[in-house]
Image 1: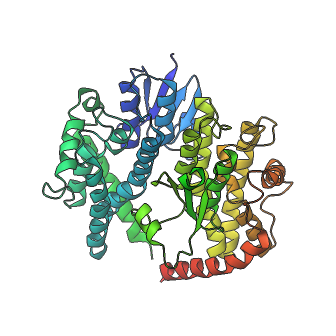
Image 2: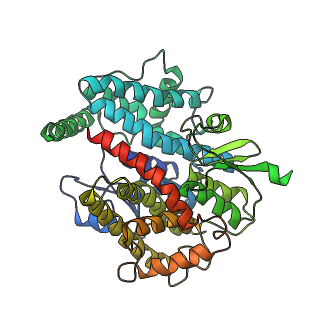
Image 3: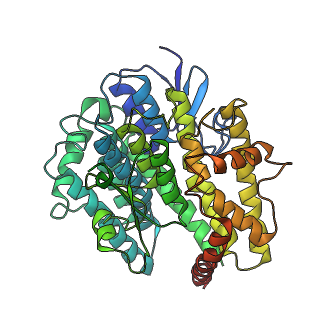
Length: 224
Length: 233
């Protein structure tokens, strides 16, 4: 079942989660690195609505939006299922994935970019959202149970990207006393060989995040 | 026992609650509809959806399922023997999910922008955004429906339900502003689709009456405008 391409960037964890899914399923794919400051005709053709990465291209047919792509991968390649079988468990996994992308990612990024007064409040909100995840992982090796699953891939940015964001944003979120289970899960996850091989080098990620942060802050400074 | 197995916590004006009701109707599932006034929110709602405290919440054998599109997928999977809501082909499922997410993340915020607009200029801008979105959805409809009545083909499916949940609100917004969001020129396919969707057996008894919703919308508009004004300060 050939003809799989992934239009992506190495730094974006939305892209990495798709790579992880493909590797877990043993699917071979061509990685097409995109320069987001200079979007290629390929990206604009395959994702005209959002013009964003990742885009999975299977037999020349594009699929965009990382969570949609993950479900497509799970339904197309049946080995090593990512989502659980039971409808209730599936609904729970989807619920937490949506929560993670809408509240946790946004919360952490806001805490990272904010300066001054707003920063404390943003940090509090981020911690509140992370506390929900701590509760969910208590007593489990992975969010998927004994094996890595859909929700692990969706939250997989936490062990590597989060601490880089903490460093660049000048804040500490994942403290050992408050998040022992989440930290332990993170270590188990990130040291899994298939997972480790896709993560971007830390220095490159710091460079990328620092540049993004400066850019966003310069935009904010220009606002009246 | 059958009827008490399934409860839906919701409110009649909510397009998100409507999605869940239509999905249950497609599967002919009997359920108890627990109307929320939301002021204050019931103990049951707060207990069933402690994270977001929002409607709809489906309670199936007392287990809560939250988030309208997740509820619709759950209904499709839990009552697998009924008519299918999502298509069977993985690519078609991906396309349906992509556009449903688009409706929620891009199109709906623009709709709220019309209702919450402080002045004519803001309203015109929001109408422009909503119209652009509808043109994209029209294109998607033409591709996905392949000449049939619905996004789901001959029968209503996931994307019909996801987008159709907003139909009454589209009509209210049109009435308010004297505009035609769905029209012959830009969205001929969706215009026809809307009539058929509204008449569908799974939809017609639960779709809010436009007049009743228009009355209710005055409350929502006041809230949206107050929120927008507070943000602007």
